[in-house]
Image (cartoon, rainbow, N blue to C red):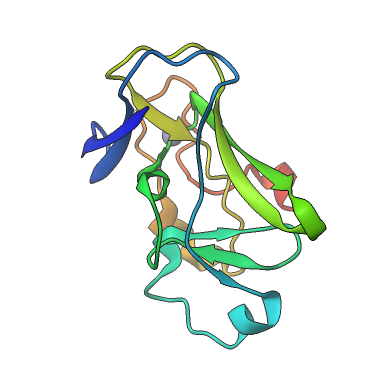
Length: 146
Ligand SMILES: [Zn+2]
């Protein structure tokens, strides 16, 4: 359903291998799990690219055991979204869905809406997605950062 190719924007990207329908699940985020406490003990400086944070404070690190979805690039005008889902025994997971119909061969994007602790790291998250509505940053809009 999805495939990895050289991105039109940055590095490696994820592309639709077939036509996708709005609302269709394109995959789930896989990788090594860290509880909030385990995550706090680790130095993430080199690994942030593939780390996905969950609402309970735990993390999924796709640099170990991740799948294609770890290569999803950011766009300020995405055609996919990440949804946190609660499985058996309250286990949280991340699944990706098409926000609209996507044609085979198109690159898939999500809006990272990253939230970072240090404002001076903003430069590292500059966006060049080329969208008409590009906000120039992969960080969450200020209003959403609380
Ligand atoms: Zn952008």
